[in-house]
Image (cartoon, rainbow, N blue to C red; front, top):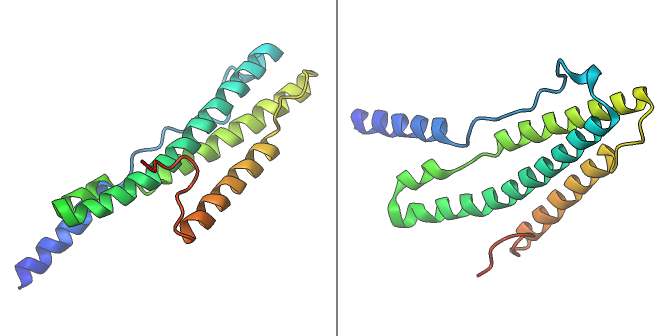
Length: 150
């Protein structure tokens, strides 16, 4: 009995260690920041907005993938739990990307560039609204935006 308990504990630790992926966070402050032109600031800002959209879509996909992994336990056993992703990497990347864009906005303002749009306040409000809508739909048993309903 003790061997089985230790085996289950070891398996649980392996599953927890394998969940998710490492974060690939953007550096908020970079050594070349002060030398960026208004055009470069805007280009980097817009590229970061594209990355934020990608991360948000990855979050939506992660939710449905995790449901599949949990359902896979019934078919394939506990090994399918290795596919779970807790989303912490996405959260860390999103937080860093927002902080980086706030830094770029500040630099653009200091240099007298046109404002970088949309503002990060608007982006964060959109992210929060989308997350709340997904949570409400999930609570009602409805598929969230972007969920595969085929």
